[in-house]
Amino acid sequence: MKTLSILPVALALLCSSYSAPVGAPVVASETTVTKVTNGECFSFFRTHRQGKGITATWGTLSNNNITEFVVQQTYEDPTDPYATWANLTPAVSCNGDRSFKYTDPTVFPGFVSYRVVAMNGLSVADVSDVSTEHIVKH
Image (cartoon, rainbow, N blue to C red; front, side):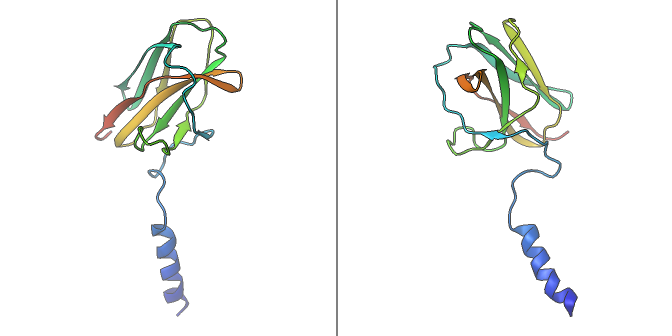
């Protein structure tokens, strides 16, 4: 009889919420970002499939006051202001170069969108455009 009372509770827990695919990458944090400037930092931003991952490349017009770049990912609608963007780690430090690259080795089937946030210390200096890739299967 105890088995019958546990079964509905277990089923309810399994079906109650779904937030990410099984085995989703662990991320440092999730951030809501509002664009401070209008693309004044980025000259280009693009993504492409590379092996089983996605590689993001971007260039800057000026690295003035930029300390690092944080690559963000979402499987939600990127135009939704309430979409959750996950910070991928590690952040890319700004070393004076004009072009940068980050490879996300773990992606899951579906539409996955990326953007890059240029950081000025603890504040946001600029946010790149969004690039979306459609992953059919591995």
